[in-house]
Length: 119
Length: 107
Image (cartoon, rainbow over all chains, first blue to last red; front, side, top):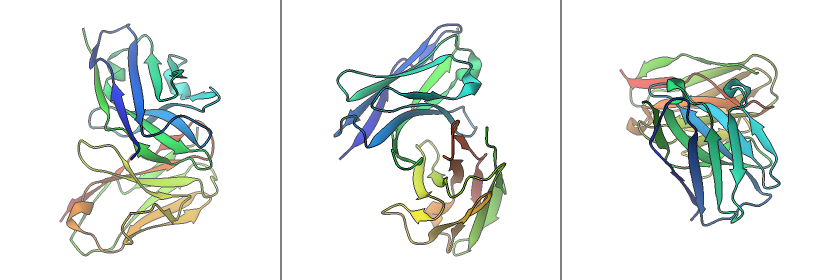
């Protein structure tokens, strides 16, 4: 059964770079799906961060001011998120998720990883 | 960016009630809308895609409708496990955005 798992540091200092990896179990990245990152600050709603296709084409939320990079690992079973110059406003639960190529809905999600930005 | 306005932001209802949550888009998005359910401390779970298509395995009490700018999610008979938060999301164009959420509480 396919599932996703986020991993990475739970604490990042202000001005540094947040790095997370999503491991895909039971599947490998191909043309059927896009792979994305979303986040949810404590007690708040959901925000889309960025999405990548198997070709390497990426789409990012302009609200993050070009601080975001999403990439696919050469193994094709992991993809990653980097957010540079973080502030307390980047504190959130970060989810990785799968989106069907023909649809924009995220049909499979990881359990989420809490990342706190604090010195 | 397309804005999604969900209403109400919260509602109180009883087990067995029929409830409807609405989602209005700031511009036409055809039928490019999804609905998610999120339980506390968990990832969102897709319920509805393409405005009215129910994801396999989702109980039949959940239904979606609408097109253009106005959409709705209806739960025909609330069950105890349905008292959680619901979000709409459009996928008409990038950036993808979500509604602010609707928390369904027990009356």
